[in-house]
Length: 296
Image (tube, rainbow, N blue to C red; front, side):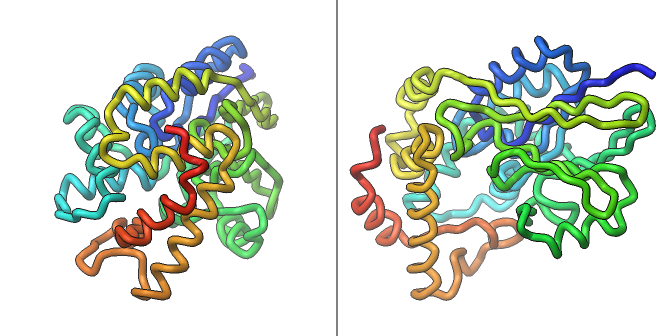
């Protein structure tokens, strides 16, 4: 049988600088196929550049929660004035109409067979683009592998480091984070699956990219005029201070739940009931508290 090498890339989040380096590395390693696990856009405002690369090299692409945010905003056109929501509006305006229509065509999962090995690719879980599968979630992992028809389950979404193991005789692969990893400074993760004679070898990959180039792109694009807070939190994650972003959102969620009992608007629908939208005084108050970490 022919040895097949499949590159699995998840959670690019608009980081086209990182994606270019991943593609170079994958090609050097003789990859024959690419699979993208969603969250290709949003967080960083370079969705068009990212999708230009994705669309040019693969038709095995699924959507994540970030794509769904843009799709639903296009359908509902929420009129929310929150400072935080300006970021979502900026991302929506940045995406070309052609790319937005392309995102609408993407499935939430695909099954691909390579040389007799069947693989289920999802963003979050087989149930939802929002649900997260952490390695410690043994009950959930058992649930999704116990009746899995495919041989392998591959997912992203958590932004954790790459991990993999056999559960219920099914290979489970968490594909890491390509674009906004809190685990590395200027490091982009992806996975290569080597498939030969019905056997699978998982090869975690980490490539470096120029975070200064990315920083300058953020400064030039104009998003900082709309919302400096989220961009700084995202850049903190990229430069090795992901704990700042985690603490910020954890504190914001705690305050919001204590005040309102929920983190979304009353008229929210669908996935926007998962979109955590905080009151302006919470958002801006925490921005003041954490401002020493904001360099953009």
